[in-house]
Length: 243
Ligand SMILES: *Cc1c(COP(=O)(O)O)cnc(C)c1O
Image 1 (cartoon, helix red, strand yellow):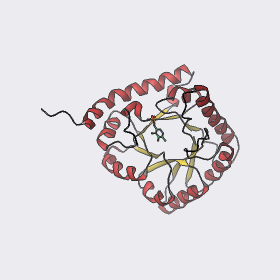
Image 2 (cartoon, protein in one colour):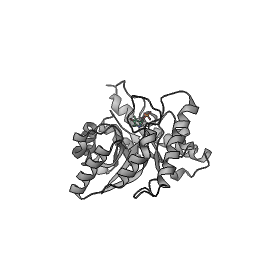
Image 3 (cartoon, helix red, strand yellow):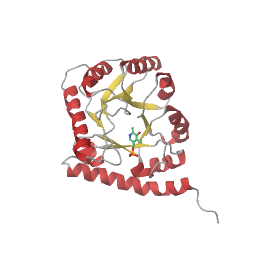
Image 4 (cartoon, protein in one colour):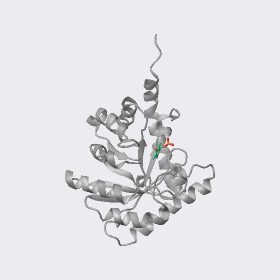
């Protein structure tokens, strides 16, 4: 007998891990004195074949994130019948905007006025709206994209004012560190920026309550600081092969 394909083995474990992840996020919310329904889970599915992602969607996952437009346009058609909601969560190049908008309900990685303006123009031409999040680099790590915290409010206000863009909130990738206080301080910073944004009175910002933050290694810290959406990959799909 031949051994099962590794993708099949991985797919078989997804349902249980998805349940565990939901429980983990709900427990984190309860521990933080929050309603578990306030925290949604988006699955980061980079590098995964469609048949593995499909298991998660069949188990009840509805929000999926892709980092690269090339992967989005390769995997999304195979799952179209299940109608998941796709978010772009990686750096989006201007020349990929049209392709991204074929599948994306939301772009979480808006980090410049140029990109926002291009998304807005394209959405106007397509007569559709787009959910957008402004990505903030709270850790200051040079490898991470995102606007600086100092420039975040100005960019967010500009984005929120553009036609057809609906600003949902702020997104960040946490510090890559074992120092929990440092990671948590970054998430607290994003929450403070969000509070300032929502309170700013700038057009289109009143509903921008979203905080997309927290990954498999630090969900509890992010939820404790107010995350409304966590982005999980390895917790549900297992470790990724090295890039
Ligand atoms: C890969 C990725 C995640 C998920 O990371 P895990 O550590 O596997 O949970 C979340 N957000 C972004 C932007 C990612 O690229």
